[in-house]
Length: 327
Ligand SMILES: NC(=O)c1ccc[n+]([C@@H]2O[C@H](COP(=O)([O-])OP(=O)(O)OC[C@H]3O[C@@H](n4cnc5c(N)ncnc54)[C@H](OP(=O)(O)O)[C@@H]3O)[C@@H](O)[C@H]2O)c1
Image (cartoon, rainbow, N blue to C red; front, side, top):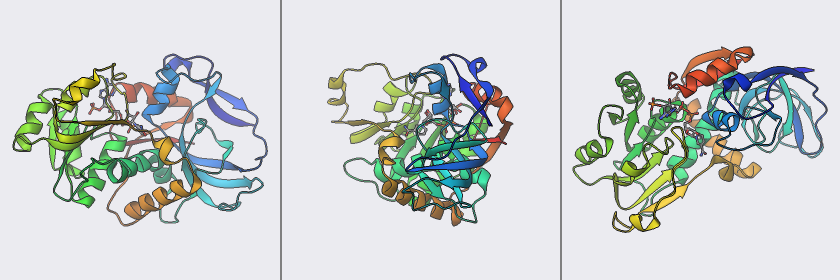
């Protein structure tokens, strides 16, 4: 038996229940992993609340690190005793031990702690695919401006540091002056408090009227319209989240007069669809963290039994950087 967090229906944090569940043996292509730490992500909130409708009952959580306990037939990249970490479907990482597909589970380098591994896989692989693989049609070069919303959050602080390492001038938005200062200390070239400032006007000011080549927007409903006004002609609107609510339907025709803009709605799960792509992306993340160019900031820790409070704080915008559930 193992402890796990489950929900029986979509709803608020009160739906999160700590239960005992059976853990079996891994089947073909699967592993059993004993977690040492679990990562908290905003997608957990969407899956709990029903923004992303899920089949019930549902075990929550998409990210963790631990030690491989058993390996199913056909798994060759992991062995019993390996330290490992993952960002992966299906959900179910809020637990002590689980059986899961091995495909997205990567060996964790010795120099990276379990807590860091648990905090960084989903958020770090997301920063990787956004900055490296979700680029405007004309490409990105050192010195280019990019706009990154919620820059003091989990994905945000990693992206600030990674963008600095790539030589981009990341303009980061955040909801308070303290969060703006944190984003700046972590590599944002410019910061905008979008709770008190008109971020589109400030982006125009910072870029000398030109705008940015790409907007990375995980806030969704509240930032969509103005984000389009921050883009240069042929710029890319990369929507990758809905922290304020889903982006409402919009008229495609508006993209023409705004400068023949491009739009994508990106998800990590397309990028980590294969073992090979997952490992290649993870290797880049491990190199960035191993070299110290990206530091994983864990600003909050909660016990598994207090995960409802973790959800409340994340939704109330009280958190910064990464959050880890300790076991
Ligand atoms: N598509 C993908 O592949 C992918 C992968 C990973 C994450 N994501 C998305 O990226 C975003 C960041 O994820 P994360 O786990 O690192 O979370 P996070 O950034 O640590 O937390 C979300 C942040 O969004 C901002 N926000 C703006 N409006 C909000 C609202 N109405 N309610 C709550 N928060 C609001 C808050 O920062 P301020 O107070 O500074 O505004 C908040 O701290 C999420 O939207 C997540 O779904 C997408």
